Length: 372
Image: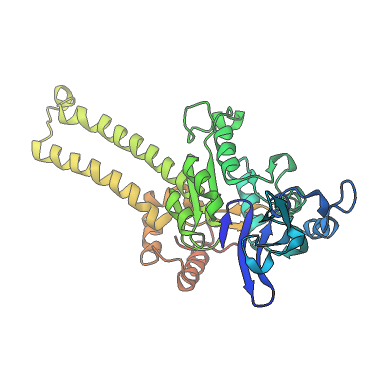
């Protein structure tokens, strides 16, 4: 057998008494090779009505066709041969559609929650680019909350790559221009999420390629970020965490600049004319070390302070106030967070719930938070 990317699968079937046949399963244009004899009327083809019903339910409708192998002697007879220069030459018979198949590719339970969080909380312009039929794509987009104008369907792997190139050339929206976390370039920054062979090229061309860990090896190798768990909401966590890290980098710059701006005049003897006091070189070196330690501790505080957002399909996500980074300046929060860092399992979840009860005065809502 062999696979035609974005089209379908073809295999050779042999059975004694039946001969050899080629079977194709996939898109109609590829399956029947444009054979108009498979049309019932002028426009309605064999199985089209059945496939339409499947697609309206959000299923993937595909066709199955068969043709005999013209190179097999068992299949060669007078009906599929022609006389040319007194020689009998086999003619490949036209393909015939025998069946249609409906494949149920169920949506992930957290798909809608992920889309709502991306659109509402992170202000991400979400697009869906798929090789499925228009009816199927629109049905899925309606379920997860993607605008119909942001849906591309019947797209080949090469078409997905071209689509990524097209998006990267589009100007930013007004809100994106105001977002300082995004590149100063006036072009859009595109992140592609995929898990299949057909997504590999697009993942490579995107500014950020995100692959689901349960996907194909080719997609994983082509991506910049790999989601280990098979949960699409981790995309929201990745983007949220990246923004928190970016803000922490900014705070490190301001912290270092402010500290050095105050300490350097003291080390240079700025107070000597007024107080007749100078800073000993040993203490000046110690203060310089404290400057580096403060920046490092501010960065490491993410391990203790960051909490994954709690995502739902109504309000997007809710986050703990500690995500804002105030715990670095709060020794009590560091003490409470001690011993809970780095866990995302059920026991870690339980500890954070107890911690939330301790910090009930500073945590609003009935949400529970997990460590990351």
